[in-house]
Length: 207
Image 1 (cartoon, rainbow, N blue to C red):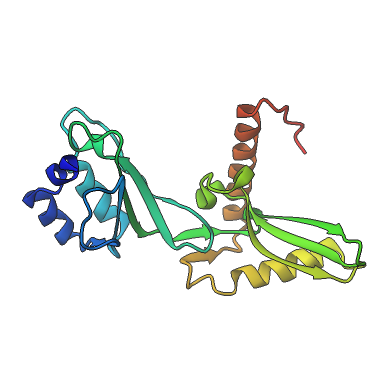
Image 2 (image 1 turned 30 degrees about the horizontal axis):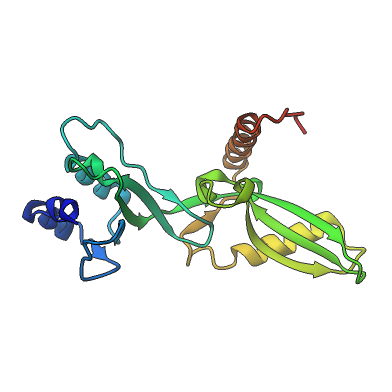
């Protein structure tokens, strides 16, 4: 499409090269409705440079959000119309490394007794800084398995939490045991839950 070609000018390509951007569908295909670019450069360096490429009439911050606990990248989804006239129907997706800190309050346990006499447990990541609305009800299954029916909640939570976070470094998240950090995350999760329920017309009971 001509709009993509207008965007990928020599100046823009020079900036993207400086940011070490890689097109995941190389070579560039101008008939695509979206193009994905990735870099290992940090968000703090990438965001200001991308903002500088926007049209003078656009006042917008570039923000990168994680799509899931096990995706170490943060994504910015930007309409091409932010950069060139006529690009509103096209999407530029940019990914950068996105480290994040989690705590026990980033997770919630659900379990049920099955007809086979097992207790089926699922540990959900409910921290919207991480799942960013991609998953149903803002929850991603981080780990799941069955337990003997007599297993208590603390044991199930502890074992699933250990399994879900054992490769934290690989997925660029850090598990904090700081009580203050946990309190902040717990408060954020609660506010996110209230906001989601209000947007769906549900009454929040505070539980």
